Image 1 (cartoon, one colour):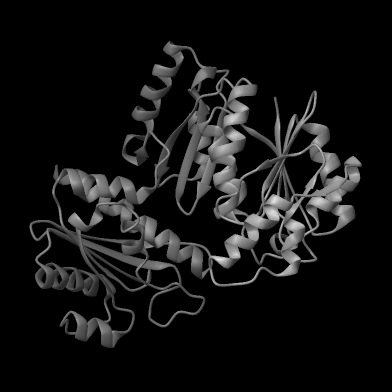
Image 2: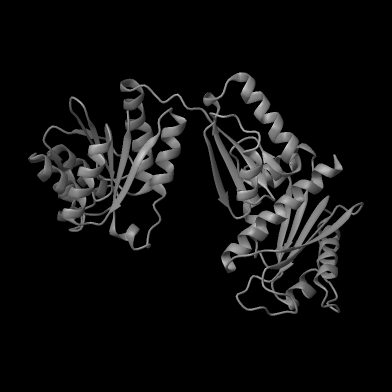
Length: 401
C-alpha cells in the first residue's frame, strides 16, 4: 500500500509559506507504521491541480490532498476534484448552521463567502474539523482512498491523527521497516560513508542526513539479522565512539539537557555571534528551568563591558571569551558557563576572518577554550556555531563525570 500527498498552494511554490505539513505527515505516518511514498506541490490552478491529482493518484492507493478548502476565490481544490471525478457538490445545510453559530459565538456575522465551505462532493464522507470551518473529506472506492484536508497545520495535523491514521490502521497493514538512527558530530558525510562502507552488512538499508554539522545515519533494523545488527553497532562504536551524539533521533540540545539534569548542573550562557541561539535551543526542553539560569547576549563591545563588568582591554577573542565565561560564573553563581565569540559575516568587523569562532567553557575547576573555522553564509555559520558550542559542552561535561 502506497500513500501520496498532493499539496495545493501557490504561496508554497513562491516560498512565502513553508510546507511543514509534509514533514509532519511523514513523521505521523512513520510512527504509525506507514510510509509516505509520493509528494507533489502544485499552484492554485485548475489544470495544475487536475494534473497533479492524476499523477499522485496513479502511483498510490491512498491520496491525501492538502489545501485549497478556504472561503476565498483562489480556494478551488474541492471544486476541481469534484469536476474531475464528475461528482455534484451538495450544500450541507447543517454545516452552514454550525458555521453561523461558530461565528455568532465570537460576536460576528458569517460572511457569505464561507458558505462554499459547506459544499460536500457527492459520495464523500465529512470529517469534523474541530479547529476550523472547512471540514475534511473522505472518499472510499474499491481500490483507492481519497482524503481532502484543509491546509493550515493546526487543522491538517489533528485530522490526520484523528481521522486518517485510524482509518489506515483499520484498513491496511503497516510496513515492516524499523528505522533506527545514529547521530554523529565532527564528521564529514563523505568520510563517514566511506568508513562505514568498510564494515557495513551487505543488505543494510542506509541513508545519510546531514544538517549544519550534524549527520543522522538512518538504517532499517529489520533488514539485518540479530547477529549482524549487534556487530554493526559494535563496529560503529569502535570506529566513531567520540563523535557519536546518540543512538536515537533526538535534538542535540536534548542530549545536553539530559547531561545537565543527570549531573544536577546549572548553566549560564554568554553569546555574541549566535545571538541567543544556544539559550533558545536549550529552552525548547521542558524542565530546563531547573538547570538553565540565564543567557546573556553581548553583541557589542559596550554590552560585553557593561553587562558583565569585563574590562575590554584586549583584542584577543580567545582571552576575552574566557573572561566572559568567568564573569558569568561569578555573576550567576552557576556550576558551568559557556561563552562564544566569532564572525558570522558576510564582512568581518574584527581582525578575524568570517567563520572564525572561539568557545570558552568553565566550571571554575576546569576551563577550556577552543577555536574553530566554520563555512557557509551568515545564517549557516550561526547555526553551525550554536551546534558546535553545544557539542563542546557535551564533551566537556562527559569529561567531568
